[in-house]
Image (cartoon, helix red, strand yellow):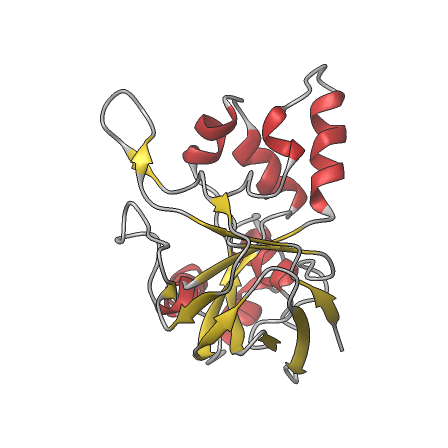
Length: 222
C-alpha cells in the first residue's frame, strides 16, 4: 500500500494562453493553506475548456514528483535548461507528490488525502497545450512515448486538503490495470498490438475507469 506526502498543492484559473484568445488554467500556483476539495475539484480551481477538462472524473490532476528529474535530464540532452521545471506545477497539476507513479497506481485505487477520499479515474491525455506551455515542439509526443502522463482523481468524499498532508492508500483495486497499462493501450499505440482487442473489451467494462476512456476502449475494440 502506498503512503506518501502532498508536497505541493496548486490552484489556478483560466489565463490568456495564446494570441488568438485561447485560455488555459495550466499555470497553477502553489498555496500554503488548507483548501476544500469538492466533487468537481478544489475551491478556487477552474478549467478553461470544460468540454475536455474538469468534471467528476477529472476533479484533481496529480503528477508524480519523481518525473521532474527525468524531464530535466531530457531537456539537458537537448541543451536546454527549462525554468518551468524548477518547481512543481509545470504540467498543470493540482497535486505534486512522490510515489504515485503510473506503474504503481491502478484505476480505482482510493487514497485518503487530508480529510478527503479520492479515487483514480484515468491517466492524463496530453495535448498541444503542453508544447505551447513549455515553448518546446514535440513534448506532447515525448509524454506519450515515456508514459509520464500523471493522472486524475475523482472525489468520493469531500474534505479539506492542505500542503504537507499525508496521502495514504485506503483501498487497492483487485486488478492489474495500472495507469501505465491503460495509457499504453489507449493512448500509446498499444491498441494496434496482437491480442489488444480482448484487452480493450475488458477495459471498456472496467467500471472505475472514467467514462470517456471506457468509450475510447470500446471504440478501439471495434
